[in-house]
Length: 174
Image 1 (cartoon, helix red, strand yellow):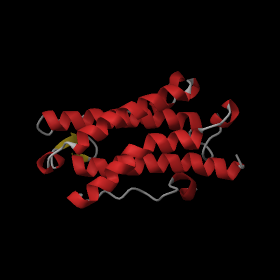
Image 2 (cartoon, rainbow, N blue to C red):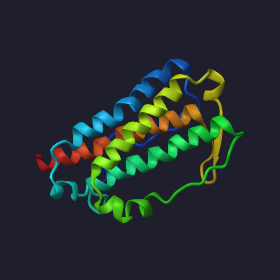
Image 3 (cartoon, rainbow, N blue to C red):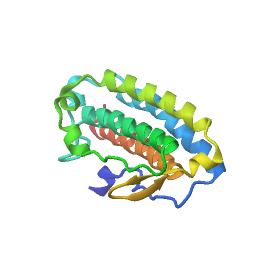
């Protein structure tokens, strides 16, 4: 089950991300919407309703979750860049994935949203100074998170969920 749940492995939070390591992570964030569009291309409504693992989210819910999660990440970046260690509000991702728009809504809306979010986010990241990468926000459950760590987390997050969908396609012969 862990292979289905974590197809690329569990995320390991780095203590810091060095300047030379940032650009490949930014490229991963930048390419995630294109990779997601490729992996969902041609899926039928029935296929979109297929869970990626037993008792897991459907492919549709995974697509909407990526938009929801990365929208929160984008806001967290902006808060950390404009406030001193702001405390962010977490959200209940499973409850969001169970809302009707995530359960039944067309994925094109979230694909467009994710593409726009990543376009803005990548432009912002590429303009950040070394000092700005050290800025942080406070997560009520995870503690202080630096923006360089957050970049690493969301680069992994996109690859993680794209791998869920790719694995679902492969296991089902789609």
